[in-house]
Amino acid sequence: MVTTNLIGSEEAMRLEDRYGCHNYHPIPVVLSRGEGVFLFNPEGKRYYDFLSAYSAVNQGHCHPKIIGALIAQAQTLTLTSRAFYNNKLGETEKYIAEYFGYDKVLMMNSGAEANESALKLARKWGYEKKGIPANRAVVIAVGGNFHGRTLGIISASTDPVSTTNFGPFLPGFEIIEYGNLEVMERALVNPEVCAVWLEPIQGEAGVVLPPDGYLKAVETLCKKHNVLLMIDEVQTGIARTGKLLASDYENVKPDVLILGKALSGGVLPVSAVLADDEVMLVIKPGQHGSTYGGNPLSCAVAVAALEVIKEENLAENAINLGELFRNRMLEVREKRPDLIVHVRGRGLLNAVVVNDSEEGSMAWNLCMQFAENGLLAKPTHGNIIRFAPPLVMTKAQMLDCCNIIEKVFLEYNS
Image 1: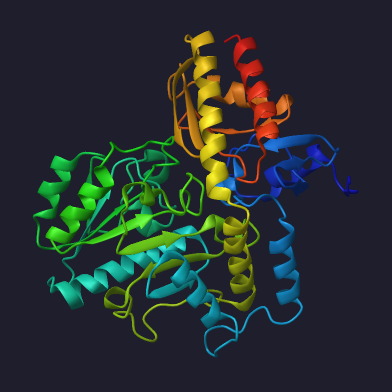
Image 2 (image 1 turned 90 degrees about the horizontal axis):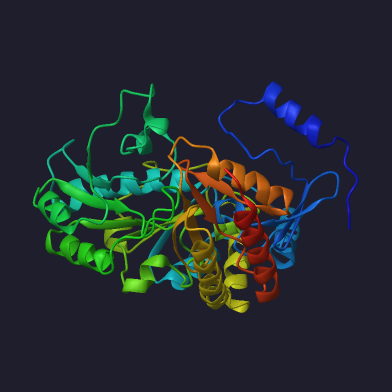
């Protein structure tokens, strides 16, 4: 079905450029409709989605079960604020807590908001449970991280694009090398460290995986030094990498789990911080909150989104199709070693590194060619192309997509 649109692609881009903040540099494709693994522009051209709104749309665009839950709840009650109880929040908190194996859930909206909430929780735990002197708590972050773009979060960033001319920054962070256990162990000797904060796979950095065993070793070090392990699974969680959480590959259970994006199947902003009572209950009434956090509409959508993950075996599908995709890309690399440097990933979170500088245009030009051939992807850090389709993709669709990607790589002339 092709919908009728009031404006075309050119006008849509013109209006954004004229009236919007220029805080993004999108691929010049306008999208007006989504269904499953597909997106459509106003003129009716169909594209395979290989970004999934940065893994927010794991369940596919406009999944009927999630949309059904949205419509039903929207016709009943959408928002009360937390000034009152509502009949959806408690049962949703129970569902999410049991789904991921924690005592408590703090529901928020965006992934960045969930990360900020986790930082506050860790500091308060550090003062009230660990006994760190007032205003001395330290959070260990890692280089190459991406947890969002709020002022507190970028205070721990090593990306100059995120930090230049936004200072002064929030104190209380020590930034160390990702994947380096020796540096981590030295940092944790400091008795004023309250938490380690990291991603199990650095998505925005270009799908960077740590060395095998790194997460488990960090978990052990955190327990040894009485430090909270906070893992940001906003992009890697909820079946994206082939398990419910990417940290499940090493049987790691963080003290603080941070979720977002696919928690709503891309339908509206829902995020969550999960922890056990000993951590979560340091927050008392009035000390943290959000008008929209835990609203009835978000609750109904989140439960439906998580049900879809299990009912449709999307983690298993991510493992199988991810292996297929990487094997095909490795075959393409053998044909174009001058163009493709590296293929890496886990499940359906993958990246192809091309032979270009971080400032170069090769990855961008390749993504433009993908779009012309009906597939949408986006470069990160100049020379890395991230490939992350919805987890509802079929094997036949994946083979079709691999053919498109191979054709573009083989025909590309720099």
